[in-house]
Length: 158
Ligand SMILES: [Zn+2]
Image 1 (cartoon, rainbow, N blue to C red):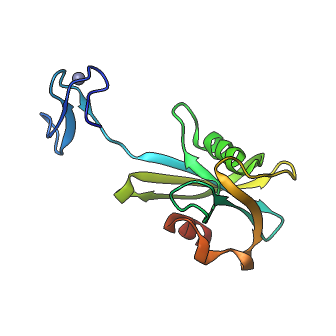
Image 2 (cartoon, rainbow, N blue to C red):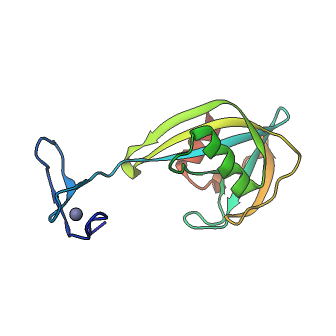
């Protein structure tokens, strides 16, 4: 961000009065533009005792790699609702959240993950616009070498 979203003034990096770290501050109206982490929400969708739903990404980064359905939480949305929405958007799957799976942080990229274990509410699933294909994998067949991100690997290992 280079310009103030309130007044259009130029932003400069400095430590505001009473603060202890560099922020982007508007030179004109003095508003401090805080940069906070974003929350990624998603589901480990289970079918039966041994199957897990994965999506092959149709978008960058990691185009063509496999991931659990997940994405950024929207403003005004709860984490469970967001996880269900992302699962429907990316995998066409209507799921029921069962239990929290994992919460972990990636501070170097400003992301906090909140993942849930979920089960299918119907048998239907299909690739959404951000997925090339969507498939259930048994535990033994998870494509470990073709996972999209270290966070996905970590979540599946858990
Ligand atoms: Zn301003």
